[in-house]
Image (tube, rainbow, N blue to C red; front, side):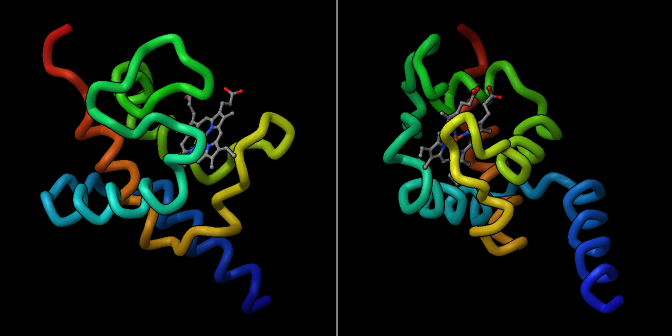
Length: 108
Ligand code: HEC
């Protein structure tokens, strides 16, 4: 019972979280990305498009905030990305989303 409630609270937190696009959050997200994501994804602002796995700059350009958030947490295991929903702390999610979104190029 307590376990189910905890899962529910985490899900509510994920689905209702408001964007935290502060500089601190972006910086924290960058550190997390350099720790967990960079071995597969290009995390630089100049990341190329049409690469696989996609660069974070291209994810920022093509995916909504909600898509980014859910794909980090619920990425199915068979397509090669670890299930970060099981690895990251819940509070690490928003900084990662904020960092990826910060890479969106304003004009391209
Ligand atoms: C072991 C390699 C690996 C690591 C580490 C990894 N990813 Fe991925 N990621 C992938 C692959 C492969 C895909 C593409 C899946 C597909 O589209 O079939 C992907 C896709 C994604 C997507 C969805 C892109 C889209 O098309 O919408 C997001 C968002 C993402 N990764 C974020 C992250 C974040 C954030 C981290 C670090 C916490 C991370 N990834 C770490 C391999 C990885």
